[in-house]
Amino acid sequence: MSFARILGTGGYLPEKVLTNADLEKMVDTSDEWIRTRTGIEERHIAADGETACDLAEHAARRAIEAANLQTSDIDLIIVATTTPDRVFPSTACLLQKRLDIHGCAAFDVQAVCTGFVYALGIAEKFIKTDSCRNALVVGTETLSRVVDWTDRDTCVLFGDGAGAVVLGVDEKVGIRSTHLHADGQYDDLLTVPVGISQGFDLVKEGKAFVQMRGNEVFRMAVNTLGRICDETLAANNLEKTDIDWLIPHQANIRIISAMARKLGMSMERVVVTVQTHGNTSAASIPLALDCAVRDGRIKRGETLLMEGFGGGFTWGSVLLDY
Ligand code: COA
Image (cartoon, rainbow, N blue to C red; front, top):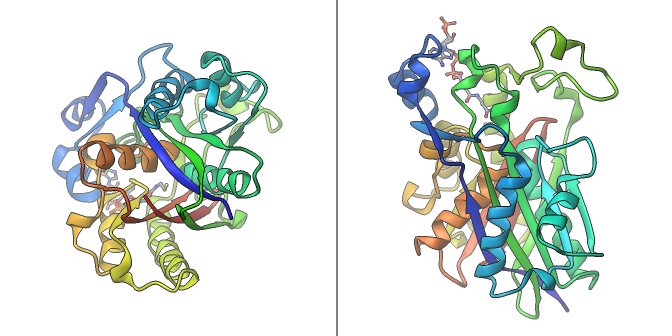
């Protein structure tokens, strides 16, 4: 039987850093409010002309190198993004061209902040069914392009970045289970309400930005993520104490802490990057993973729980042995 294991990770953050002090000059907010309500201290912002594919390419090359592979070894590319470079081709196809890879399947997944979890879940199925051997799975976002920088409710929350993993076939178990969910009835609580088919009237009116009912999203996120942790442990017959590391989506330190409490984990066993990355949507989980792998916290053989929640609503988890 074939399993999917993470062979290598990579991450990339744009050079420009936007601090809370910078935001104080842009909107009616304070460093103290942002820190205490969200845990965020700074976030990275893509330079003019720097796209989701640019960020993805850096992260992807680092992940392929960490996996000790060549770009020519990759035979599936999945990119999770809410902020693609173009309507089409997909960002995955644009990335494929950058990496000089030809012929393998390449496509985007749109599940907002749960995008990377969805992409990993799909890649795992390709590997387990012997449809590919080395899948490149990327989460990349330029959320700064759809944020209203005059709206203090949302502009303090988001950042840009990309994270990637190479998932390879192995006889030893890597990914143990994936759990993907959605409920479209909450479309109005968190949305960018413009698109190709619906039209771009709001763009002309200068309103094509993230709209969020923060309080309601917060409550839904905490309850839903609590349930997905229970579902994941039950599916694997595991106790909370069997989890070595929690790698949550990085939206708000209060949501992350609530999940750590729910799992009875000390914050030392939770990978937290929200303070310096902000919410990078589909990039947040692979970026957090890459940070903790590269600084030596996460070691081979340890059991990781990844969980995410985002617009849609979408939510999901991945349990794996690293
Ligand atoms: N600076 C200062 N004050 C701000 C502010 C800011 N940047 N943003 C909002 N406020 C004010 C509000 O106007 C409100 O003022 P009022 O009481 O006078 O009306 C007050 O702070 C409290 O606002 P509230 O929305 O209740 O704060 P909160 O504790 O819920 O925190 C969020 C707001 C957005 C940080 C929080 O709701 C959240 O994180 N939600 C989920 C976000 C999320 O996960 N999104 C993505 C899912 S992937």
